Image (cartoon, rainbow, N blue to C red; front, top):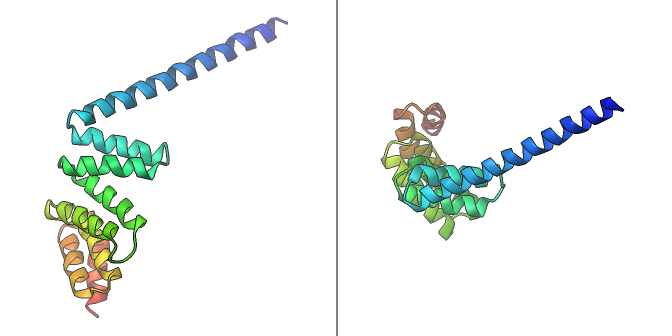
Length: 154
């Protein structure tokens, strides 16, 4: 009987600990959202990451990645551009918005955005433009960009 009581006490402690952890995560996410609301682009990016990976909420993630991008967080532009491109088709408004996000980050030295912009242009049938952006990515050390430049040069 005492073993059952001990187990019950331990189990209660585990549940209380998990509840406290859940409250801590919730409070942390709200505090990060507050920082984003105050204009902290890194916080906006983090909220976007949480929405994407924890909540599986692409729509909310895109909102926060866009805020991060607008605030100067270039990886936010890359992530937001990816989500935006995935919601559209060739020449759609979504692809145009994705291209703008990728271009902003590429111009700021974000090699992944240069690569993604190259891929977007290639899918639109613009191989020479694609090669230009792949070359920019390659110049920044992006090996897939270098491979695509080589492939498009054949």
